[in-house]
Image (cartoon, rainbow, N blue to C red):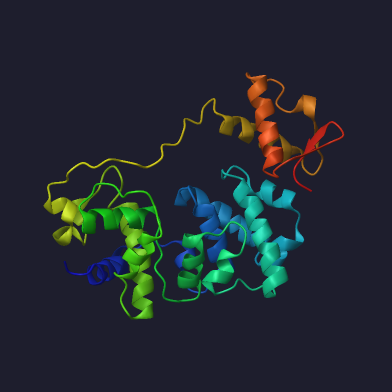
Length: 288
């Protein structure tokens, strides 16, 4: 099978979305923040939060000098608020271990709080121009369809990095484009539920298309319904704490009208366990 690099590069140059983190001079810190925010969150929701965050804390040292409660408050309704705590801790580590400069080395990036294989390589590639495979959910779906002939990828694993590495050109700049293009193709063309094969640059070499689009087991983890969930209860408690910050809220006044008092109490306990809230003297606070 011919490689995917050349058609992806040509397609990306004419079709890539204009996103803040793709603009020249965006910087490693901006890239890192954007990658934290983009985890399980749509691009359209991230952009205004990203701009506000970088406007308030343009460097890791700026965020490190703030308290974790400020980070959680600024995160607002972006979802999965532990990411705000992890990003704050990573900023402190960057300040203390790396002189306030986001490290370039993948192993150094992996040693920071909240950073995994994808984020570490994304920063090294997109901020610093190094050559590494970068694999997200969209990339895995593109490879599954084009190379394996499967409708959906299997569970993520270390082998994904090796598979993507085999598709990267030797040229560093082109390798970065292929990484970005595979993700972009999966995000806007080779989508999970409604792929647009008529405009796909890889249609001619797609094994899934050639096989007649056979169905395959979808092993993606389904997200539980939000309405009435523990996640919704946690969000309601956090909103009360953000609105009251830096002051705390008496425990009896934390969403007292929540329809399931047991669920509310579980939400409070889980937030304390995650470091997103602190109980002191009968009151609840954001982390101090």
